[in-house]
Length: 313
Ligand code: NAD
Image 1 (tube, rainbow, N blue to C red):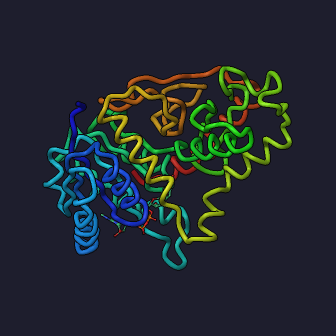
Image 2: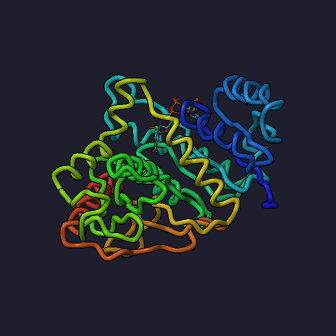
């Protein structure tokens, strides 16, 4: 049997709790520790989950402090704060950086060896900032990045081709945001490249497929306009990432990592397909991109570069 570990969740709002609850139902963690600046909220969430223990897998959920995270193998950061009236996006970003400076100090003191999984938006920038602020290696600081976008992409392509999304090999790289890039040249089902030929009775019609990508790109906006926030799918992505690390799965996931010259891009965080295991990022896969995709990834990097350069760190 695989060893179970402790996971910490910092920020117990919609996203943090969706991640915690998915883990609670998956039988992968021995302990889930909830940390929130609103301690009563974390306590309430922990109580609520523990009340389901008679019908769930054995796992202990409790509210805690940073000191309680000392044995955590993975710590998820989903703490967020909204924009105040009159505040610019940049002001918010820099206010967030000062919040994360404090969180990182606590984490480096109490859980220096844990792998950090970052979900807070703008996730690529926050991941970069945490990498700059923390003394742990960059490979131990992973943003969920385009993992959610890739999940949406595979789900929607699965619906279009009427096939199990788990058998759709397709990914989205770059920014988790408007400049993200669908890698059409490598998308395949059952070993057949979609761009090469008709697959499952559907030819490679870029107009139709671009419309599917537009739905992926703006999926978050669509969900938020209906329910006010997104949390379920990102919660599953968080749990999947935590489980991949716990079980040393060496799965290939599109997550936000520090770029070290890949595709000519340096010193910022964005998503590329990575091998994830026990020690965080264990490898990077760099598919050959066609000209259109190469241009697009460079543009995505330029968008992120602007924010990174305005960071107060
Ligand atoms: P929320 O407002 O429901 O929850 C945020 C929680 O963080 C609150 O409980 C708050 O008390 C807590 N918090 C704030 N500052 C804190 C601090 N210093 N220490 C500890 N806890 C603190 O927000 P949400 O809907 O859960 O969203 C959280 C973040 O996740 C946002 O940045 C959101 O944009 C992001 N998000 C990311 C993705 C993704 O794909 N990466 C998807 C959806 C949402």
